[in-house]
Image 1 (tube, rainbow, N blue to C red):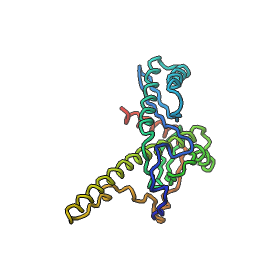
Image 2: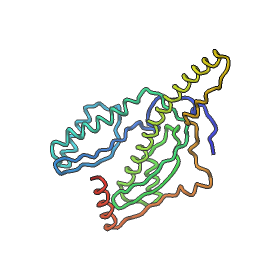
Image 3: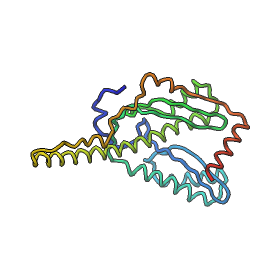
Image 4: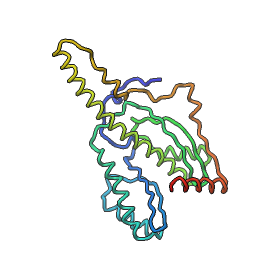
Length: 240
């Protein structure tokens, strides 16, 4: 199933998160002096950089972490913000209007697996609202699940947006090379045309066929204490 071509799918736009709020997904995993701090949250890239240090100091104070964490937290956030800002102003190609999003996460005792489709060109979409509706529909009561679901969506949309920047670059290169090849062919009066579009398969559809729609069914399990302990032990072994 392919979507009909639209003007919005052909024309590039300037890089930003394909959501109503242009927020950066920030993930922290810092370990020092035998203590480990993990967190995931969003950050407004328009906020002044001075807020990063303020946040790091407040986090260390509230969680009673060693002072060494302040510098590491601030540096990690700043690095991720700098990467996000490096894409700003660049063209972003969104030919794939509908993209698959996959959820496979555990929050405390709640295990979630789900697949669904997301409209990449809908800049009014709201992952947080989607997560709230998802939790309500699935009867999830843990207040930490909703933010984790929203973050997982934003993190994947961010990766897709970065790939869209690369696609826009490739399209520009292919057009330049094609023009050069056509000029060379016409000047020689013959030859085979180059099918450069085969090199950049940006126009393939990601919409699943109707017979595969049964895949998009959420699974929510509530784990026992023993199951959580076993999963955490496995995760610790994998991170070593």
